[in-house]
Length: 164
Image (cartoon, rainbow, N blue to C red; front, top):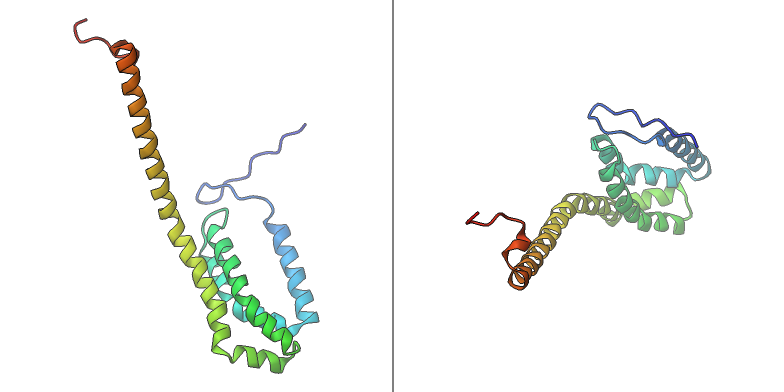
């Protein structure tokens, strides 16, 4: 079985995966189809997904963690206005009605802001959780080591004796 050569490092030394071009082509195809079949929906998505575009521009990590987090929450926020547009008949008048509603903007951009909040808040929480688990493991291992020394004597520590 032939092995693939490693990905070429980027400017920061982090390797990027090779699937970026295929994703871009697929995105352009979907965008063109959406613009042809449902221009009001495409307009709503263009207005509502601006925070995702900003996150994509600002994201410097190879795995695009910021973009993925903001995009997921932003898409969730765009769902309610998209359903309202669907109920309005996917017309330009419906688009004006949906975009004229401040709650639509709150849902779309509020979802994106929750994505930013998750991106910024989860790493410190995860670090705290890992530190608590490490402290707990350290305490359990220390108690186990003490019990072994009491049971078997000081030679189980592997340290040289003081009198030798």
